[in-house]
Length: 364
Image (tube, rainbow, N blue to C red; front, side):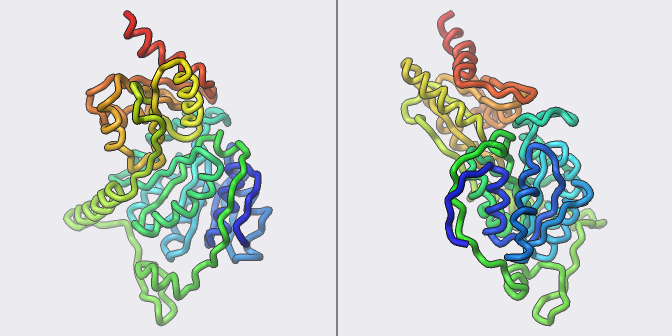
């Protein structure tokens, strides 16, 4: 398959990119608004072309444990779900992180808590960036704002996961998963052979061939000192990721008097709001975190030095705002605007909220 340009949904782009990347296995369970990932893979039938396994598990719990098993053998494996389904996966994600295994998880967020709504949300930020399962762990979290990034982040997510031996997550809101845009699909690359996997992943557990070292994988350690050593090793990996893998975009920050911070589809709405505000002489800039973990703390801290205030715009009650506040350490006021229940704000609502917090206050 050569490079190809198509019009498709974000969820469909995930599936096409997975096949072209040479993913070995997908294990998932349908749930709105991400079901097109599994449906598209089933329609593509990659088991006939690349040998990729596509399996609808009996539940999200089963799916994540299949990912755990596949990842332990050095295979490139993934799953996708939406918010309640990812909640069910948390124990498995903690095990995968503890096993230092590369894997890709896609979460196309919907509103909650509980079963909530099938409409879009960004309320899984805490779950993704703080570690929703037990223990001290992180995984790399990529937040796409376009269908193109949905496709691109499949390869990036796997590359980072294998580089650091840690899970990676694509954290998309339901808007990005469902909207259609033109996307350039990457050229296909061949799946790795068993010998290549053995050479690239000497830690992998399967050990029958003579050229593959037999390994044992366990996340249980009854010796407290050894368990502390394990945790310290994880933390060294996380520090390396924080030093090398922070990604973000800046818009109109050079002359900004105020700053928006937003991720995913809401960053696009903020860009339109900024355009309208600047026509009225209000200089607002935007920082869009692309990696939600590691978070662009330093970039926000630097940008905050020259502004009068920051507004964090999210589809939730206020989650990323905590990381923004820690970044600026109280040097400038930080306010929040968010809609809940699947309601998506328009650019004028964002400007109205900004003016209520900053412009009106400065006039008092």
